[in-house]
Length: 113
Length: 110
Figure 1 (cartoon, each protein chain N blue to C red):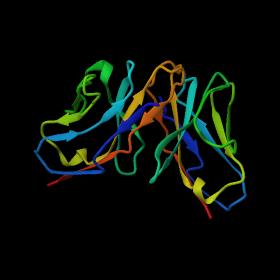
Figure 2: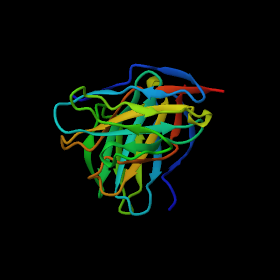
Figure 3: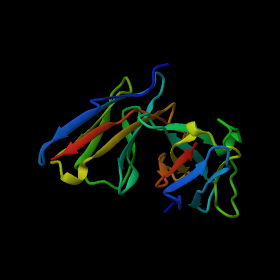
Figure 4: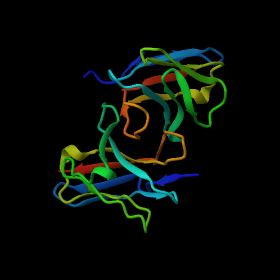
C-alpha cells in the first residue's frame, strides 16, 4: 500500500496570510491526525478526524482548523499566520482511530516570513 | 496530564557498544507506549510497541509500570541505528492522540 502523502512538501508564506495543507491517508485508514513539530516544542497534537468528524483537539488557537472528506483525505488550515507557526506539520493515519498505532507522512515544512 | 520525558537530547556510542535510550512517563492508568524512529531525511516511523513485546532491528523495550519507564535497548549498536528516537504515550482518556517525548538523537560512531 502507498504510505501517507502530504502536499505541498514545502511552503513559504508571509505573516497574516492563510494556508491549507493536504493529507491523504493510507488506503483503508479512516482516522487522520495532525501534529506540529518544532525544535522548541517538539511534536504537539493538533487534532484528529474520523469519518469526517473532528473527535479530538489539542491546545492550539482557533486559527488552526481542519476537515476530513468522505474519502478520508484531510486538510488543515491556518489563518492569519504568525512567525511562530513556522514548523513541520505532520499528518498521521490509523485504521480506525481505536489504536494509537499511527503511520506518518513526510510532513509539510511551513515557513512564515 | 500525561507527560513523556526523554532526559537525553544526544546519546553517542561506538559501534558494537550497548545502547539504552531512556523514556519515563507520567500516567496513573494503563498506558500504551511506543518508540518511533526518524532516520535522516525519512519520515517518522513506528519502531515498536510495548503490547507486542517484539524485537525490531535488535531493539527491545520493556514497560516497567513501577518505575513508569519504557527504555529502549540494543545490545550492539550499528552505524545504521543513528537516528532520532521518540518515545510516545497513548492513554485512554477518550482523546486518541499520542503524547511524544522531546526525542533523543542517537549517534553511533565507527
